[in-house]
Image (cartoon, rainbow, N blue to C red; front, side, top):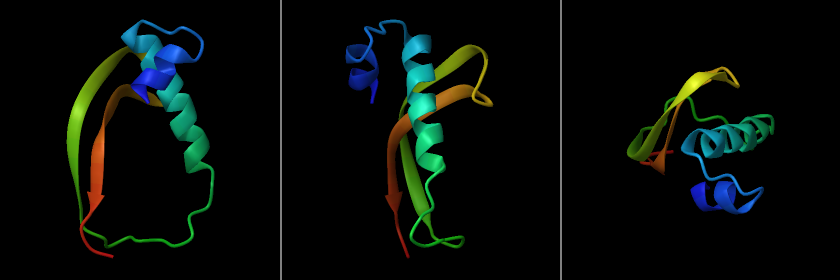
Length: 72
């Protein structure tokens, strides 16, 4: 995602890249999932954390990394 944010539109500043990623993520959340997993166990490995200078898409921090679904 970070590479795409930099390549598409020439965003080089971390905050600009984070806002682009948040925009893409908000679009993904609009799509209905095929199933709901309210009790699923999961883990996350956070690789990058960017604090935004102002609220954007109702977020002030973007954390990216890898999420693993441990149980259905």
